[in-house]
Image (cartoon, rainbow, N blue to C red; front, side):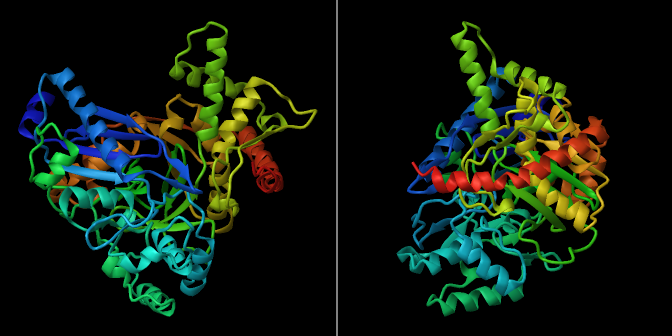
Amino acid sequence: MSGKELIMQGKTALGIEFGSTRIKGVLINYDGDVLATGTYDWENSLIDGIWTYGLDEVEKGLQGCYASLKQSVKEQYGIVPVSYGAIGISGMMHGYIALDKDDRQLAPFQTWRNTNTTEAADLLTEAFQYNIPLRWSAAHLFQRMLDHEEHVKSVASVFTLAAYIHYRLTGRRVIGIGDAAGMFPIDSERMDYNEDLVRKFDALTAQNGYDLKLRDVFPAVLVAGEEAGNLTAEGAALIDPAGDLCAGIPLCPPEGDAGTGMTATNSVAPRTGNLSAGTSSFAMVVLEKQLSKVYREIDMVTTPSGFPVAMSHANNGTSDLNAWVGLFREFCALMGIEADMGDLFGKLYTHSLKGDPDCGGLMAYGYYSGENVTFINEGRPLFMRTPDSAFNLANFMKVNLYTSLGAVKLGMDILLKEEHVKLDKIMGHGGLFKTPGVAQRCLAAAVNAPVSVMSTASEGGAWGIALLAAYLADGRSQGALEEWLNNRIFVNLVGDTVEPDQAEVEGYETFTKRYVAGLEVEKAAISSMDW
């Protein structure tokens, strides 16, 4: 059938992902082909020291993204969509959205970017002997208890962003297992929260004077392909105030951006990995066996099917890089030159390939916020050089590209060099990879492994959650998620692969040594730049 016929008959899957700076909707057929997209730009706010989005902004963004997608469908096909085979919601992992028994918000939404949970994360890691990152929902909830925040006694529900939106659309308090792995440790045998650790958490809660039980307030865990509820009339009106969208559409389990990234790159089998590069950057490797010990720099999460994954997650990715490109655009305007941002990114990124393998001795830190991998709780973006550094545009762009992956590489070094995890290939996706070949070479140098980018890379996690919705609607009878992705979605997809260049590998190692040494300057900047 044509795309128009599929849309008219509702034989499509819609995925909507809430990223850090953009909400994106992707409409696909059941073979994964993109039929239409929609977007809505938004930005987090730093209010009273907390990185947050207002829940009213969440609603506005959902509606804006969907309206954009509807308009795209109307322009391309001359119709307005009224139903889908399934819908999927994805969002930034981790964080803390707390509601009372009447679903009223109790405290500001704390995103993954907040690092104000050090005490809780340290205590839970020690008690569990399992790494609890500062971003995880359990750390946020426990920190609120340690701080004796008044609202905790009224907490009835705790959600991630994706699980919260899903709840608003379906009335179901459920979460995909990959997103759940950013709330609390997962038992991949039982495909659920780790029960031994649940009991320890509840005991710690009681010791701090609260009768709250984790399973009472956290959403129930589901795996890919399980039914996660249907769009209610209220949910349909929330997405589409114009009233065209019908109720009753099935939704797949809501997932985090890590799970959708794995799905979008078919990185769900052992010895495969993927790196998502955007406002934050994170690399994930599917493990053949558990790690030998606990590392504070490494998160243990899961694929959407529940298999264990080691993640190196950096809070800071391309924000500072984007800011520099914006500065170049401002310079162009000053000179009377009309410059398209896409062209600027492409030309500047490509020019970086002329830089020295070690960036000519330049150094940068795009630390807009704290960075868990380097144990720094605040951020100060910095650019540095010595008097004899090779200061030119190519090296300047290269160092900003390298540093956008700098913290991620430190975590990957633990996996590849200390744990000797085998990595046959790694897939790149996200905005950093839009310019062909450039970020691939940077990443290949960072991990000393081949890096592939599919033609769908720019669609990112929104395409990934659309695939999970399509799997619910039409793929479950064709085998496990891994089989369906291999045999139906990726069987004919092609991509470009870049092999590591050894001179660039050595150059990145030199850059990394300087990156680690220069962290003392970043710390000094934090202590002195308090204006």
